[in-house]
Length: 154
Image (cartoon, rainbow, N blue to C red; front, top):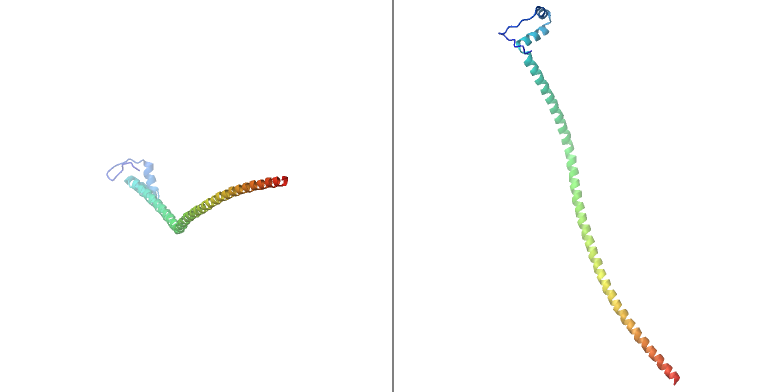
C-alpha cells in the first residue's frame, strides 16, 4: 500500500503478477491500480473516518435519547422535590409548635407546682396551729381533769 509507486516512479512486477492483473476482474484491477497509485491508503483512511463519524452519530443519537428520557423524568422529579420541601417545612413548623406546646405545658405545670407547694406550706402551718391548739386543749383537759379529781377528793 505504501510502496512509493507514483506516476513518475517505476516498479518491477513479476511476470505472473502482470498476467494476474490482466486476467483479473475489473474491481480487482482497480484496487491494484489504486494501490500502485497510492490512493488506497487515503481511501482506507477515509473509510475509517466515515466509520468513526457513523459511530459518533450513533453515540449522539444515544445521548439524545438519554437526554429526552431524562427530560421526561425532570417534571415528576421537580414535583417530588417541591413535595419534599413542603414536607420539610411542615415538619419544621410542627416541631416548633410541639416545642412551644411543651414549653407552655412545662410553665403551667411549674406554676401549678408552685401553687401546690404554697398550699402544702399553708396546710403545714395550719397543721402546726391545730396541733398547738390540740395540745393546749389537752393541757386544759388535763388541768380540768386534775381540778375534778381535787374536787372529788374534797
